[in-house]
Length: 170
Image 1 (tube, one colour):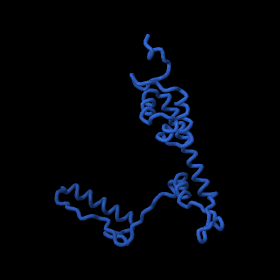
Image 2: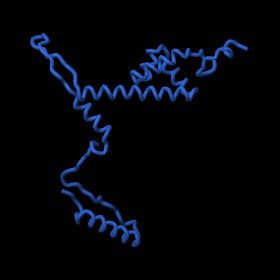
Image 3: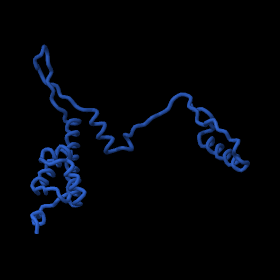
């Protein structure tokens, strides 16, 4: 039995040295704090590529990585809430000297939080104003009598549903 066969540590790919479980555990801990695979791998002393190979080779490790990412994302959300609701103190300078502190809040983070928890209510809306052509110029010469009749009935139904407006909306 070769040395590689005796080593119980998991290997992401044949021929590659195995990684100590402690390094993988440190990676998961760092990931749960920062939420970034690249940063957590660097802090744990392992390459990002190796982490992805382990995730592909060991589905149970991938589950743990996703779980740690969720925890990291929760931390980011907590920080966004803190900055939006509690704010932070920022020094006020006069003639190069900090004279007092002012409480700052992030309206932008608040908007993103609202969009996240109530997307239907706070989604982006775009309204058109002015004369907008609602019926395009169509070449109907290729339609047969049945298709023209059907098109006319659909157009009449659409006009009735829109309160009788036909070509432009104001």
